[in-house]
Length: 162
Image 1: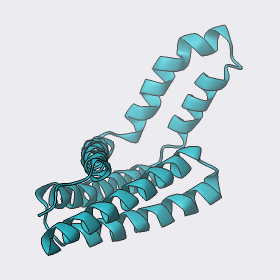
Image 2 (image 1 turned 30 degrees about the vertical axis):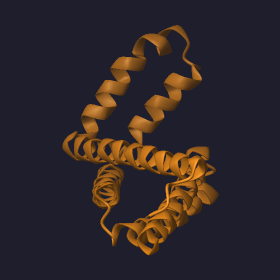
Image 3 (image 1 turned 180 degrees about the horizontal axis):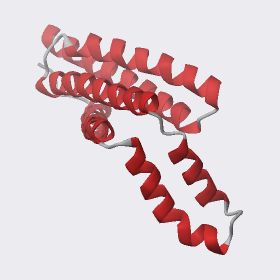
């Protein structure tokens, strides 16, 4: 089997780093989803009121404190359940794919491309509706990860042939 080129080695290192980063984000999403599921909407409002009380007493027009309080007031049970289920599902699915990629399991490569492509579509739809730059940034990162996964798959196939 021919030795890997420096470019291939760098791409492999980038692939591994991006997959580990995806795994860390996925674990954070899973933990966040469980936390959101367990908290009560009234607790969120009480915490926001407590945290913004001093700032709003000094400056009733404070934009950040007003924004935080507005978000807490809009935190309904439907919002709570949507975000909890989204984060739990998103995190668990990504963790499964990441585990497969890190273990070098063949199905994980096409599965990760499909999963990330699906997330990109949802994120772009969310971006177009809300204008959330975070969704656009996540989509760009996911595109880079897809490219790295495809490069890694190509390299693995070449190594098997060689």
